[in-house]
Image 1: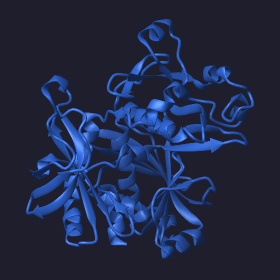
Image 2 (image 1 turned 90 degrees about the vertical axis):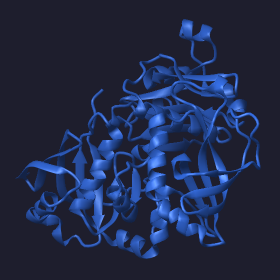
Image 3 (image 1 turned 30 degrees about the vertical axis):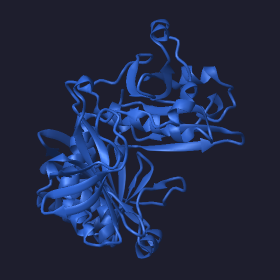
Image 4 (image 1 turned 45 degrees about the horizontal axis):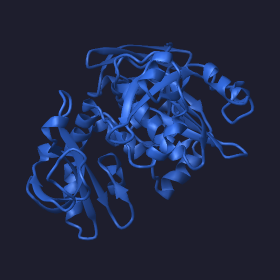
Length: 410
């Protein structure tokens, strides 16, 4: 499929230098975040050839006036003073770039490019995913050696009509070489569990070397320990034929958008249905989807989470010094031999942190494991940093993850 440009717009605290291409060029020449290969100015647009990790990218940079679209999702918390400054801003710097084979690495590079060009960053409008990102978060992400979470590459929106019908659909996956994803004919009661399926599938597809073809079965999860969730992608034009034309998300809603490179999620409930190519609505699993299905996280994503948790461990340790905070750590337990596979031998599960001494964590298990016999809720153990996959800080005001540490610097 054709990959559209990833479109972002940087909002600076001061727009004074945005019309000075020589100053912008000096900034990219002096950065250590990537390599500049060539540049040219054409009609106020600065064309850059840059590279990172051996991959070459073309970027187009130009100043532009803007207004924040009403439906954009605010991804981060902004101090009031930043909100006021953003509302007053009228001029931003557009940074457009075509993603390479690794969408997450490409996204990370685009953030680095923006921070290099606009050091006094207030916010970033990610037009491709219809998100508003905190400038503080973007700066921290750009400085990190670890890429942001895959969920930043897209946004999933829930649109409801006059009835109970909810239409879930994504923005942002096309720039990654994936179709946008949809769930049709969801409801106000079930759309959250359907969203979990959509998000899990989006994250998995971003990690796949090859996107499954239309109608091809794809294992996503277990809705319980015995029943697999086998999903499949159906092009929107075929999918809407199963529903009334005037349904929310139906054929009548496709006149002005959501009519290219987008697929709806359906399921195969049995091997026989796969053989016949007879797919069903995700709704057939609604009851089971409410009972904590076992979603699979790829090894690459587990490693990314571990690396970010380790890189920002100082925030976690500092938070432990405040007795008002409650801390959780996700540690990997060796699973029973009969459940081990070539790609998976550990169950990553949440523990409450009881004590931190140097690089050692004393912790208490907060839930029952699925695949580790003889270990139960309340089990206490010591771990090292190599066992830590993720962490959470619960302050009196909010929850903070490794991704959210910009909040601790506000």
